[in-house]
Figure 1 (cartoon, rainbow, N blue to C red):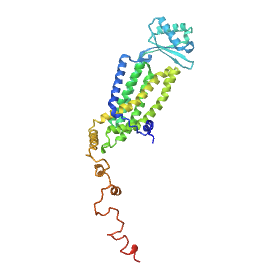
Figure 2 (cartoon, one colour):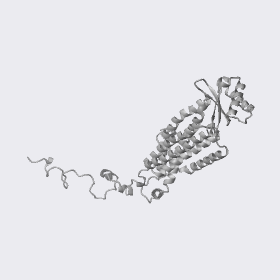
Figure 3 (cartoon, helix red, strand yellow):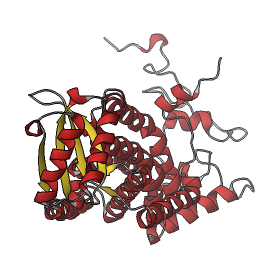
Figure 4 (cartoon, one colour):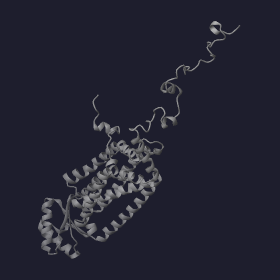
Length: 395
């Protein structure tokens, strides 16, 4: 019979991937990535949009030329105005009145903004009234940030309460640690790539928290199912039962993540990349990276961290020692395998008379057979009445 492939074994939960056994490796990789993310925060920082850093934006009709030509001429107009401002980003946006280019610049005063608008109109040879502009203060971005942080704290607090009530506090700690890791790694990628941080980015960060929590709960639910009453037998350690749960739920988590990433990937690569819809770029990247990282952290970080915390529990420590001691004594013959005659487990289990008769020890020489006696049989006489043939009743 042909050996089944990895995909089919994953679907049956029989892949046998040793995730928990390699938890030190996953912790080391996670620590390294967190260190790189923190270094990126300090050295590169974030490319803040005008909503957070403050600035001006100019909307120019797309009929003036290409995006590159527009950015170049706006840069020349800023230089001619002599204000020391520069172009931050340029993107094409569709509106009810037709497509236009939105050019964002650093902070300008009202007088400087009017002068730059006139210079831009002169560069393109169009009427200045066709160019609209607005100014955004950094105070608005500060309000958005503070409210987002407040929402994050409330969300994490509610998640902790739910997980403690649904599972236990160790699972709550492991899940929240996975969520925080997810945010740090996603923010690190955002910092390294240099995409502009906008309100859409903040919304995306809050959105991936729900997806990451779903992934963790799916795995933890299977872990709880596999470890319920685990101390009643000496067959598996807690880590082995948790590793089996990961293998059994891995394909479900993978399918969920792939189905979620397909539309987000289309949003990012097709909408922002090919079609040039710049407004989708900020939201698409944070969702794509966050969902991919959420799948990895739920498998490689949350459950191994849970096992690490559970192994400090005295009850689980004692159970793991019993399992390992019994496993080490089996090759030496000091412990009878489970199910064998005379084993402790076999003595504790209810005995089926027929199975005991078949699997029991050999009868002693001269002993009466242990078969079931016919009803009514006495001594060596047949079951009928007296010694009369047929044993029929008297009439």
